[in-house]
Figure (cartoon, rainbow, N blue to C red):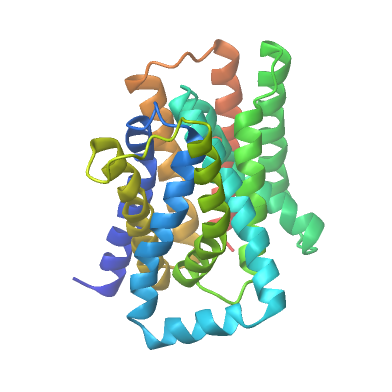
Amino acid sequence: MSGFRVGVASAVCAQVLWGLFPFYWKLLADVDPLEVLSHRNIWCAVVLSLLVVASAQRRQVVVSVLSNRVEIFRHLFSSSLIAANWLMYIWAVVNDHVIDASLGYFLSPLVSVMLGFFVFGERPDARQWCAVSLAVAGVLVMIVANGVVPWIGLLLAATFGIYGMTRKSASTGPINGLFIETLLLVPASALALTWISAGGTLAYENPFGKTELILALGGLVTAIPLVLYAQGARALPLSLSGLLVYITPSIQFLIGWLYYRETISLFDWIGFCCIWLALFIYSTAFTRK
């Protein structure tokens, strides 16, 4: 199989696995989302440490970052953003807001367009501005018609968009970067677990219990699609990688709608249709550059 086909297969598998995440986190619906996040951080750091230790190049990159105060603070900022994004996503899934969560990841590429304009001075073309305007219109339809701000989707889009902007200027790749980020979060995760334990609501008791094993596997579940994504990204043009990211929220939307039977009002459908049209227009602009 050619490198291109392997890259496509790896990237698609990564996006599909991310899209199926609601099924996994639903298994932990009875566990405090903060405890789920804390275990995810710790076990993800453990799994990724194996990849880092096995590669001299990765070890060198990690040591270089951890010996640079500016890089440490940059990764602390990005780690806070990804932790907030993960926590919000886990909370949304276990509280029956899978569709709202998918909205956030549909919107995040368009948030990146706005951040590129305001932060990096990038100049979107007319089609990209049209896409952003349509997405804003879709969100406004939801707000005006339902009388409720879709804050879950907006917060997920904002944290993920700003996280991507921060990672753009980082010196580490996706695997090294996430390892450093989760490693920096380990002390906070340990403190969170101690606090939850002191309150008597800690779910992790028997290391060989079903819930405990699912919590521990969260690190592997997080790392596998990341590795696949990194492999795919090296082999694919940016335009194709940009299109494949829509696989994840599409699967999430379908799971929330068809499997978990979450309610979608007529105006929600109108809002989503505006956003989907915006993404189509954005994609045509992106692929023709």
